[in-house]
Length: 79
Image (cartoon, rainbow, N blue to C red; front, side, top):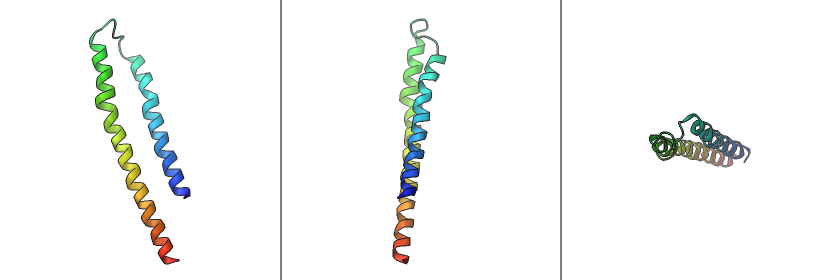
């Protein structure tokens, strides 16, 4: 149970870092009002760059959670 909690908190922390850094990245980009292509870059970051990272974090979490489940079941059978 403790391992699942730690795993969930690690995945949550990765999501917070990933999504928390997006506003900082957007402030570094040129203002869309000044440069019209800037809005396209923002949408590209949101639509293209963020989702694969979310999928990777989700896949990492599922694989680790399933491993924790298997280890717990093995320990329960051995006891």
